[in-house]
Image 1 (cartoon, rainbow, N blue to C red):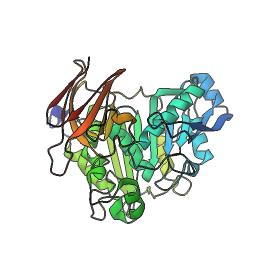
Image 2 (spheres, rainbow, N blue to C red):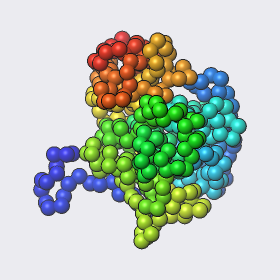
Image 3 (cartoon, one colour):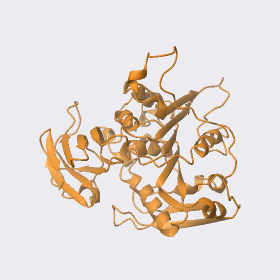
Image 4 (spheres, rainbow, N blue to C red):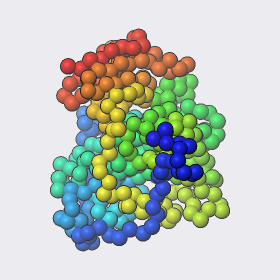
Length: 399
């Protein structure tokens, strides 16, 4: 793609991703009769967390006409719960042929566990998806997933691209950005916005140790995620939003990585804009419904996928790459990082992968202040290899 630039007709080049905000008709079979339930499920990686919850919503007629349906997950704000995602919003998604979910992130509204800001809690969303598929296999298609995140949910949605690259068809991240608190400069991280600084430190840790913040620093690898996968990424925020303007850094990271414009779009609204991306939910910020229309238009796209089987990926804590491998990190000596409560929360490693050869090389990220020695676990299917990485270039060969 990059080789096309400057070739051919003046102004031609790779197509840019452009959302379609036009109204979308209801899906074939739409009946207005819904299956709706509060579901309780358990964590697959933290066995003590048995009381996690979600809301399941789909239209019976759409499922009968075209099921299993693509899954649309609405992700709630930083200090909020799935109850902030209204029934009307979930039903609108169902009317347009999606099997919808809203998920309580751990530690909210009486659910098990403690919030950990885009680390282990992300797996709760995938557990909710697996639970919905088990309950309603004729309605929920786990291979076709969309994420739509508001505020802190936008941070989690962005982290879904970073830590589960290629697993989603499209991701909408609204007014949060890719830095929880690496930067102390206002406008460059959520912590520095002053919105919830004490709560951020409670969830992640004192900023005297920035390593756990670097393990959540999506700006570090979002360009790789966009480049290596088919997922379409939409970013939107407003110029007057102190929480949202760190998304400018996410945009800069995508530009600096030369990430293909055919797979990402960003827009900062301002008081003169026709549409304002005002911080909140659709009921209070109706222009956000236009971004829902953009998702509705993409409903029939094929499943997300990796576009590469060899390459290098910067793993922030953990990664489940659509190329077919999974990486979890922890402190040295931990035999099972994925199932350990500390796994995925502080280490950053570069992983060079060759999936056909089942071969991986891990380095500890030479940048100043980044990870030192750590345990790394790599999975392909049922095969798992774990070893301590105490030297850059450590090789993992999976049988």
